[in-house]
Image (cartoon, rainbow, N blue to C red; front, side, top):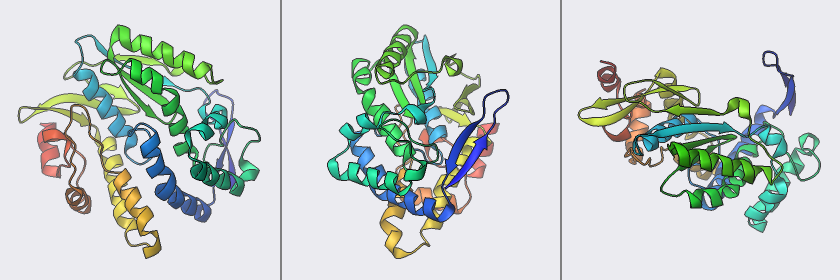
Length: 306
């Protein structure tokens, strides 16, 4: 493990632990094969871990959900303050099966020098920090999701929580989330809270990406900028490269590839044909959600820009 100090403007510097390459790759393989599939069944299907392209997909889903709501729909983004350092592992244990929790503890033991003592906190950069964090936060917010089902869409992506729906209801859900996390010793960061209205044909900044709601062949389209296209394409291409690894890793590789397939959005009919994803990535296409969110060629992308 490497200890790195990060400085951000006038903020106080902080230490981040980054695993050595070989150890990190091995641990990531384990997460792909064990943590990710299990998280899929115990947490919300869209929140089970970090991966290439997730931020873009989350942003697109949030915009699509807001566009399908009432005219006063808003997108509210909130950030869990110092999330990795305050995540309650005691709560996480309640959500795992005994076998899975034993695996989690084994990974922590492997990196015990860099794991905080007690039942709170996961060092940022820990191999299973992303999966554990998403499971805990998603399960903590289960009650809020149930109360606002069909009214407010709540998407969890790491320490970022995105809510979409009518203004009053969405603000109410945000307040409930704040109280729920506070009961577990966690808090929202007011400096990173943002409320955005979605207007057609006007760019929207969300999760670091600029999106725009357009029309393509009579169908609604969300157009990310090139950085968003590249992020999604990179995730699919990486899965293809992993196919050349040793056969013993094939199960984990398949899990990684599937985790990069776009999920079904509320307003976007995502492509589900695996062959189409792989062919498009090999041809160096980019992700254009035109015509229902399928992978689009450079020619289609040119049409979107016109």
